[in-house]
Length: 280
Length: 325
Image 1 (spheres, rainbow over the protein chains, first blue to last red):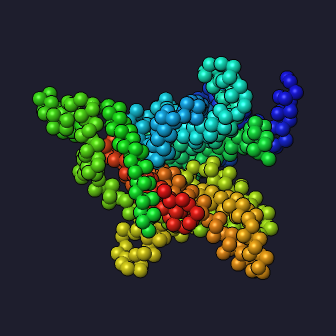
Image 2 (cartoon, each protein chain N blue to C red):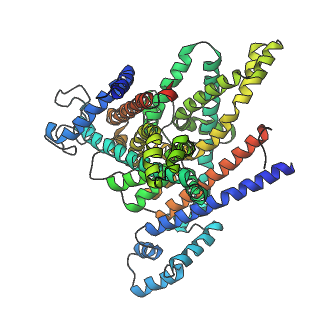
Image 3 (cartoon, chains in turn green, blue):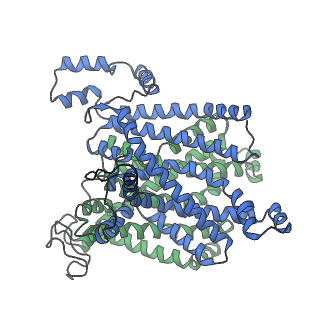
């Protein structure tokens, strides 16, 4: 490990919230991956008596829902969906945003003009209504949800990267690279992209958080993947028995809140490491 | 006044390409959907002969080339002909129009509450030396961003309707009671409390943070020092000189929030059975009524454009420094 990396790690370690968040998320990811090993039954299995409140029966630490399904198993399996959707949708939208932003900022003129109008279009359509329409058309599945969220939430990254590209393009080292006759592709990848990417990484954590929230909203609205247990659909199902057993609704919601808070804290820590000047 | 009018016209021209792109996007979404209008009608009818289907296709123009279909679609949508909702038995445009007031009430009230509370909080945290207020705002922002709106709504129902029995769980007014006049207004207000709270809670923190930064920026400016030097009271300076100018970015942000507020209203209206466009969108999803869903997408996008236009114009009126070109 070189001195620069040690230095960066040291700065990250100073942010106690980010360290806790990183550890929490890491264990959540591990648990989500290991779910089939840890739990003998899947999330849909009816393993106990219905309506056991949390903390009553040690076999069901978080209780059971109205069908006698273990809520803890549901939460862990739901984590798989949420984390998967958050990670992949954020990756898609960040990649799209970087591509649009660099093309727009680097080539300018009509490319910039067209791409910015398209960006405006995506910023104008109300995000959730747009995603709901796409998922309803493509039929609900993890794939269509990820595609819909990824393809609609890249605008902020695109604008950010465009501004960075415009700044970097005018800098002396890029001018020098031009003068040395490097190909545009090489200049874009080695000089522009590498210098513009750190704010995009920080933004991608925010995108991951909001992708998780959007997936939860979709599942709550009945547009989730019907074959998997997700936190949003658990809240939606619990809603039917809100009057008598509100814990069925409350617990998955808390899981969403904690996960998104952890991702945001991680993003703050990354911002501290990657953009030390901006974070001051 | 002529300047203002010219500004308005130029802004209107700027939105034309985006409006056309929205129509294009709607058209392609409609084409992505499995089956066409003829299939939908045949599905509603139960069964149909191939000849009947061909006649229907000719009637709807779905046997034409894509380009001709796009032209037809654009022409129809520009006259607000958004098609027919077979599940609801009325045309989409009037269905949406009938749901518009409820959503406007919900979104408007939430925006107002969020802006007032947020500006007050932001002003307090910037001007007083109680650092816990700005700490509280930061924590609330973090939690507010991470909390799903529908979950906030459901938890409010648990607290205020089920446990405390203070507020009704949903709807816009009491269907059983025959309230009129003042009593009716009070009844609607009681039904509004929880939906508005769930929708506004997140935006309060956004406004608070924005006001705080804006005030801290404006406070450093020379004219504020001049006002202090003239011997004006510090409360007067902080409200008349600082806050008034710091409010300008709030106007811009309010316009930008409309899209996400409408998105939020989809879930909030679903939770509280609020009879607006959001609830209509949810019903359209449940009934797989894609025509209606696309109509809602188009109308809400249009609303966002209009909202942005209004904010730009209000901003230009409020701030004489803005160049009207």
